[in-house]
Image 1 (cartoon, rainbow, N blue to C red):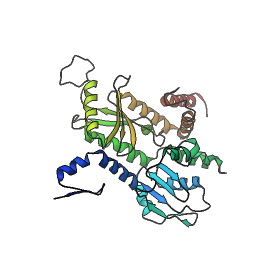
Image 2: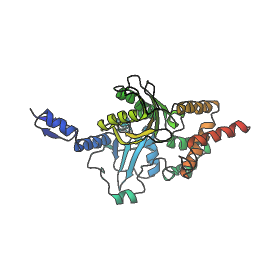
Image 3: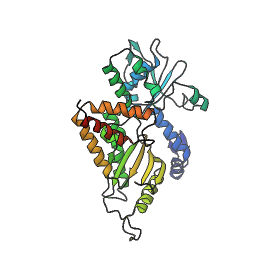
Image 4: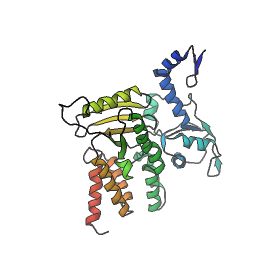
Length: 335
């Protein structure tokens, strides 16, 4: 009896042939494209007399935008979460008393883009928080408080994004790696934990494997060493290539990590197995933020400034050191 692949619209002679197809590059690429379509909409025709930036800002109310592109008379928007797309497609959407014609994105609409299009189309957005994409906020004649609110909404992770994109990764990793670490527990740390994360920021993860890690090279085969952990974890990641991609192990770093891209939530991750101190540092920052509600906006502004001028992210100073300097300023200055 023939078998059918809904994603690729192909028939196969038997189950074995179908399973071979499902593990192949063609199907995985089709599956990835299908997920992109589920998270995307097309607005056509474009509403007149509404600036492009205002239109994008309007759609950001419905969820974090991963990518967008304006063409002559239509706009394509890809969200991080397909829930945003479902909301927009299932009810009338109005802006400035104009009803938007919103359609589901189809594979033939702007799926492949040439290199020249990527280079020349200034409205294309892959770094949604780059200054060019948010500077319109400061051009509008509004109050400082309104500009600050719009700025923070545009650049920082919100609670829904943290829960669905970041915390869910930890939960799923626990389930995946219980095969080799039955007592494992995964924790977020860094900016996604402190509340100081930018949209599209990486996810820093510490995994407690639930068993002692032996640092000595002369150990029994039953004990866990860092080298053995890396090999076991990477083996599972490579096997689950529909879930993990861009896997890079850095075992000789001061804190050994495995970098990978988590396909299910579109997040770049760094996972370590011996950096528990990072968790407590994050708790410290989070506690300090709770003491004065002025701290978080100030930190986000300075972090963004440092990012824009390529001062932070390990290039000249770490984000953690930058945050500590701000806290030091507040503890030594009467404000």
